[in-house]
Structure formats: C-alpha cells, structure tokens
Length: 575
Image (cartoon, rainbow, N blue to C red; front, side):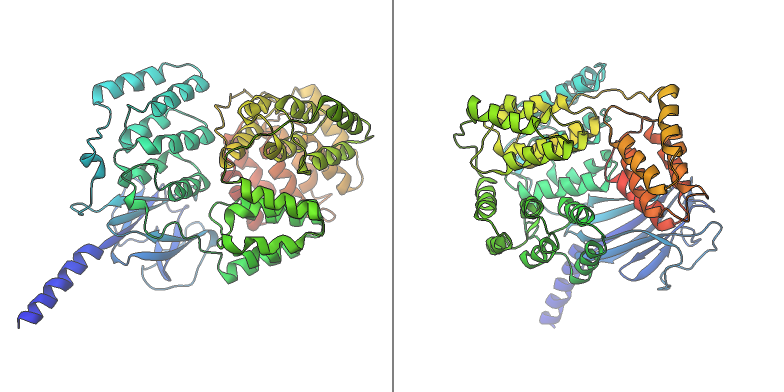
C-alpha cells in the first residue's frame, strides 16, 4: 500500500511538471479571413464556434502537451468557408502558407499567434509557480529602477533621428552598470523602425537582461520570423553571455541536420534550375537560412551541382556556419581541383573563430598594378571577375582604402555588395571596414553588409537611414517607353532587371506595377513565364519607396504559389 501511494504521488508530481499547454491565438480573423491549423496531425479552425470570440481575437488552448518537438502547418481557407469541427483530423482544405517544427521546453507554455495577414509568431510563457534557480538574485543583479528607466526612455524618445535613438540605446546597453528586465528592453527596441537595428541591439542587450527566462517575450518587437530565429541561434551559440542562461542550455547547442525528405525537396529545387546562376542562388539562400542545418554529406551533394570552382568555394565558406558535423567538414576539400582553393577554405575555417592576426596590406606598387588591370577590362563583368579573383587570392590583403578604390569601379550595387562581403576576410584593418558602407546607395544593402560583418565576428556599426524618393514622372516615362518598345518579352524582362538593379533608381508601388504589367499583360503572357515576373518583382522590392503598398503587386500573379513565394521573400527581407 505504501509503495502504491509513493507511486501515485510520484505520478502526480510528474503530471504537475509536464502540464505544458499550447494556445492558438487567431487575431483579426472573420468570415472572409480564416485559417486551418494542423498541429501534430490534428486540425483546429479559426472559424470554429467551440470557443469564445471577442473583438476578432479567438483562442484555442490545448493542455497537457508533451515536452519536445511538435509540428504545425497553417492553411488559408477560402472566403465564407463553413465552420469545421476541431480535432477531426480533416485533410487540409485551403492554401498552405506556413510550416514548422518547434520545441516546447520544460516549464514553459507556448502561444502561437496567427494574424489576419497570415503571419505566424511564437512566444513562450513561463508556467506560474514553476520552480527555477534565479542566479541573478544570487548575484545581486537588479534591473534599472523605474524612475531611472523612465528618464532613459524619455531621453531616447526625444531624439529626432532614428540613428540618434539607436546610438542612445546602444550606449545604455553597453554600460556595464546597467541591467534591464525583458520588458524594459522591449520598450526601448519598440522605439525603432529598422528590423536590423532591433536585432543587433537585442543581441547587445542579452548579457544585461535580469530575467532571461522571459527573453522570448521580447521577440514581439520583430516583424519577421527570420529575426526571431536568428535571435534564438544567437542565444544558443552564446550560452555564457549571462550567468542566468541555464534555461537556454541543455541540448539546444546540438545542430540537427535537415530531414531527408526536406533536403530531397531542396536538392530537387536546385536541380530544376536551368542555369548555374539559378542553382547558386537557391543553394546560397538555403545556407543563409538561419533555421537550416546540414550534414557534411548533404553539403557535398549541393556543392557538387555547382560547376564553377569560385562559386563552389564561396558556398562552401557560407555552409560552414550551418554544418552539423563540423569535425568531418574538411572531407569536402576534394571537391576543389586547385590547391589554392583548398588552402583558402582551410584558412577560412581556421580563422572563423579567431581574432585577426597581423596582416600586411598589399604594397602601393602591387595595388596600382592590380587597379590598372581592373580598369583595363572593357566591361563590368570583366572588372567584377578581376576584383573577385584578387579577393579570393589567399596571399592578398588590402587596406580599407584599397578596397574602397576597387569597389568604386563597380557600377552595379549588387556587385559592389557581393565584393564588399568577399573583401571582409582579406581586410588588414577591420576596425575601419564600416567606413565603406557609404559606397552602397540603398539602406537594404548597407544593412545586409552590416549584418554580414556582425555574423563574421565584426562589431558592425549603426547604419544611417536615408530617405527614398521615387523617380520623377519624366524619367519613369522614359524607362517605361524603353521597356514597352520591345517585341520579345525576354527583352522587356531584361530591361526591368536593369532598372531594378540600378541603385540610383527608386520607384513607387504604382510605378512598379506599371512596369510589371508589361510582363503580366495578355499580350506577353503566352510568351513570358510567371517565373520571370516573380524574379523581377523580387528585385523591385529593394527599390520601392512605399513598402506598405507593395502587396498591391500580388494581384498581378495568377498563381497563388507565386503570390505566396513573393510574400515569403519580402517578409524575410524587412524594409
């Protein structure tokens, strides 16, 4: 009898510890906007009548959820779809808009929000009365007092420029005598408009947070799932940032490679690209996705589809941050035919986790000879290749001033950005590297380069924001006339690529729509693929002046898959 009672008590204690819950929160749904959520194979519906409806917010709370991995898929249902009964394991009815595998941690409930615009976000809540160790209290670390924080908050609010706000918050987070609650840090970050600035400062704030167990609540300040994933990875990879990080430890540092079925889909997608540039872009996007990890064998299969040695080398370097079995990564060296490439990759790997050693920049005589060679190329492609080869040569190092001269030869913003990233591993004075940002005309490019520097061990800087003004009607009419005068759709598409790649051009959504309509019109549609339309629409996102109206572009597509692809693209690249 005593043994039975002890067993019963033990079982009750186990239940009390593992009683996690998942709450599905539907915001802004109505008869025309409703969703089906398939959670671990069971369906739940935003238009179900089995739970309360209050001001457009509908909730389903699922109790007694297991700790560990769960899967979720979200489908957009058709307008005026009927009420479906929850937990019926029905097949998907609508269009797939989201899919993910997520984790529930011991002692935390999970809130999953599905907004009316289709955005899906996750946030953890610590279970009340959950017993945990408060190391900050033991170390007598207290957050900033309400009065002092209010002074700081008002000081930041009073700044007119975003760059000034960023500088003030950065100074506060760098002050080693300051500590903040998650709520306080969130209030400061909410004063900023740039997603990249919020992400950089959130990373900076993490060592100064007193309640790290609540830190995921701060993720609400981010608009993109990519930023939240990147913050998760940052915390996992920096377990010693704060003495109260034990909640983020355990097995979170284990990088699980992509599941075979998901990888096979990616591999097929790469193979389906008809040229090498398309294959390179798909592989590059995969290695840049912070939620993906790959085994060395998977990376080998992807790199083997790339024919150019220089492209394969660039992707191999990019993949190193995403490899799950680092110890076997050097087995990829046999993919390279030249010893120089193998040495370059080896030097890259050995240098990724170390500080810069003494580097001597190229002599003036050597550099002037190189510059003359670059200027002697008769087209931009030749100039680009000459500079890329110089930056890929492992014995070359350059001062920031020398890099500036080489990048200034490039007319294309995208080429300049690609070469700037490549040059970072060859710079002799990395502390001065951020002075090159003014060579990039668009805010998106400057943010991209700044994030690259930070991800590769640099400190980055506060990136100044410039205002975008759409081109004049006169200039736009010239461009429109040029693009519309072609008989062949391919020539029109080529013109649009050129327009949207020009870093000195900015367009309103209305102007972009007029240009893209040349491709989607009934006259050209039998000859031009919607794939081409999707490609130039993605390019136009980086040149738009009124991003809030950009969704008007979606109606140009007849395929829901292409509309979804464009939506995913812009959400992953916040303005």
